[in-house]
Image 1 (cartoon, rainbow, N blue to C red):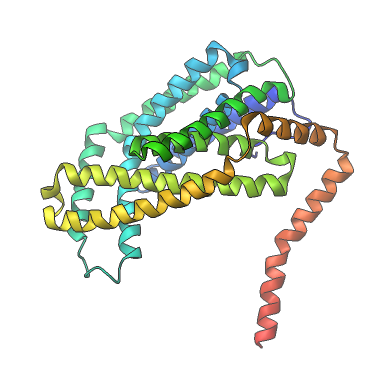
Image 2: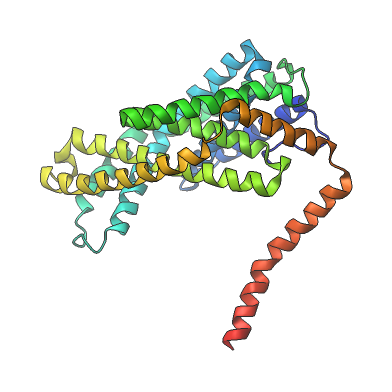
Length: 330
């Protein structure tokens, strides 16, 4: 089932359905073994973040239950993050190496990669991945059992409005702080608030599919750039803390110059897009979204069928376009 509210479904029913589905998805990902477990942990972390995004949207409804669930999910996420971060820094290294391959000598960054691989093995051994995964799965099952008892009472947009406004407002404030301070911590905090709002828009996608998907795409780009920046921050900290473990001061400083250049580009793009994404005042965003919600709820079934047909037609267009190009080439 999709990570979004469905027409004909009450807000409490939707929240419970989505949380159960995401927990079940997480448990399935954590059941993988061997080489697939690393990707499973990555997907599990994403599902946990989606659940946290959802409960932040309905925080006012949950009351004390929110704190309990959010704390438990946060602890699970942090444990899995330790595992995933060791892979993320390697991916950042490889991405940057590929981007600057013409300026780098062959295997110039091999000592850094070797050091990161050693670091990854040591961290995984310290954490004890099988035991950590088992504990995470057990904690998720406990949360799942509590979902039916969550105090979700109100239906309609009133259940969502406070959370939507609060997280959007926090995102605007975090963006302003990041622009002013320009610190790794402030950009990382902004990223977390962007992710909250991204999840909320994904949940509300059905309100006006085409428009919401475009907005969601911009939020995803913004979150990705800020996430790439954070991965480079983590990588920088590792290299600066022990340069001798990564080939020595000279090679580390050479690479960190590329890291700094990449971070500047990422942050400039993020700020430029962020000013557009967060252009509306929080109250205006909520008012606009409520109007879409009301229109969606009152929308006749025939219109929904027409939209579905249009989407199916749109999916076929790329294939027809490709076929036309082949015909023209022939």
